[in-house]
Amino acid sequence: MPIHGFLGSAFKKLEYCKGKVMVSPNNSTVYSMFRSTAKWNADNLAIECGERSWTYGELLDLIDRLASVLRSEKVMAGDCIAILSENRAEYTMLQFACARIGAIASCLNSRLVVEELQYCIHLVEPQLIFVSSRFQSLLDQVVYPAAKQISMEGCLSLAASAELDQHPPLLNSEQGLLLLNTSGTTGLPKAALISHRAEIARMTTLRMDLKIDPGDAFLAWSPMNHIGGTDHTISSLMMGSAVIITDGLDIDTMCSVIGRYKIGWLLLMPATIEPILRRLAETKTRVVGVKVVGCMADLIPAAQIAEVTTALNALFVNSFGSTETGLPPATGHLIPVGEVPTDLSKKISSLCEFRLVDEDDNDVQQGEVGEALLRGPTLFSGYWNAPEVNAEAFRDGWFRMGDLLKQTKSGGFEFVGRLKYLIKTGGENVYPAEIERVLLSDSRVEEATIVRKKDSRWGEIVVAFITRNTEALTDVEIEKMCRAKLASYKRPREIYFIPIDEFPRNGSGKIIRESLEKRLESA
Image (cartoon, rainbow, N blue to C red; front, side, top):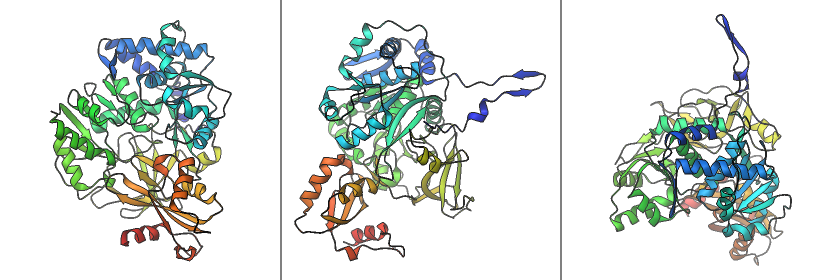
């Protein structure tokens, strides 16, 4: 498996002054950082999950024992396990157990349908699959006999009887820790490999740019197969914060947590702000404290940004990052409390080298549109088992984000669009090719194009334009087709049947999605 290691040159031998200095791979890992924090904060709250809670000392012991369970199942450094589960404490414990022995946790998206899930599992070839009872029936439909299955509910019982491994392997920070699936432009998911180095650097940017401290709790409601749930949970535990884990978007529980804990970053995506504000008002919850709130300001009405910052007395995070990059390249802009923003330009994050280039990789001038290139320690290590994709995504150590931006006169950076068309709906990334591939697999569909439409709740929604060969094909049939093969957030919310000659095309015959978007605006 090719891994993109742009930091490799930093690990060469160096000589200076009169002595010789040997620079070897950095032996600090996510686990070693957590272990140091846990030993100095053994009695402090580490995780609360429903009625259960663990101090740092208790959590360290459980993680060490779970690591022994993995070793007893012949999981070694570099091997993969997979996790298919809702948010729960055991999810995080397994990730840190992998960190202890150098294994890699593939965090599977439970919203995928069988066909998608099977592809993701076969891609990473896990030795073990940890599955919760909620998703056992889904996994039962996947054909992958090579991996042993272990119940998430039984993890702690296994850990309790495990003997501690006194000789964990020597690791370095470049080793992989997580595999997180991202949407693929070809219609098939990719698995982004996140290293220990990247996670440690992401914790650092969280502290530098958002001013998050060990005394700030993190409310982990976002799915742990998603960067928003996993990245910041791991960062919080490395720095010594309390992590409050909820079973997804549980509004009542989240409001209760906001009323009991001082929160660092309250991650709220477009569709979640209104119900949280409404419930806080209904329950007259006294907010203990929130430093920063939100994400993706471009997809949220300006008035709502002012409303939520006022209600929580918190700054709003004008974020611009990705699974592959973490908070960088541009999550440095914090919108003041109560402000109705008129400028949503981005500010470059810490620990980030950033360029905007033209088609020939020449740096563009201020005001000119260019593709975003990123280099820095928060960067992922490459896509798992995808050499051709990696060759296209990286060039001379720079990651090509596929996003188009331009620098404004004020020095900020304005998002222009995607080099390859992307839909952001409810915090999830969707590429049209994923859906078009499903639609065009039906012989009754002659042409199909997916576009995005702005939506006050979800930020954007998926819309389908279809030319059919027979009027017997209805929107109900289309919905049924998509339900069988696509996760719910990928399914079209609106379906339009049009003649094939109404698809706007450029000189080379390619359909112009932006013209279809304008058609929706004028409808």
